[in-house]
Image 1 (cartoon, rainbow, N blue to C red):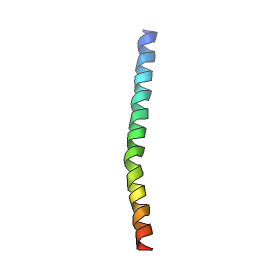
Image 2: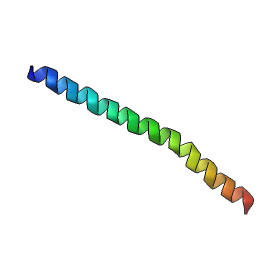
Image 3: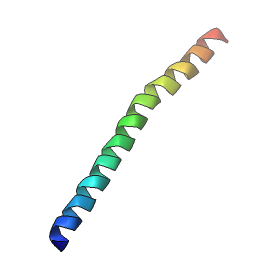
Image 4: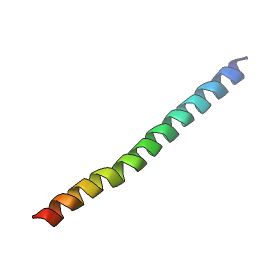
Amino acid sequence: MLQFQTLGVVSCSKMNLVGTLGRSFFEFPNSFQKRWEKQKKN
């Protein structure tokens, strides 16, 4: 039972990590594009 709980916590934190990484991975190009557009205007 304890092993199963640990497994659940590990998989949950893994999903959280993947979600955070995915979000930052998608947000990074957006911020980069905005910065690039600002530089082009100047």
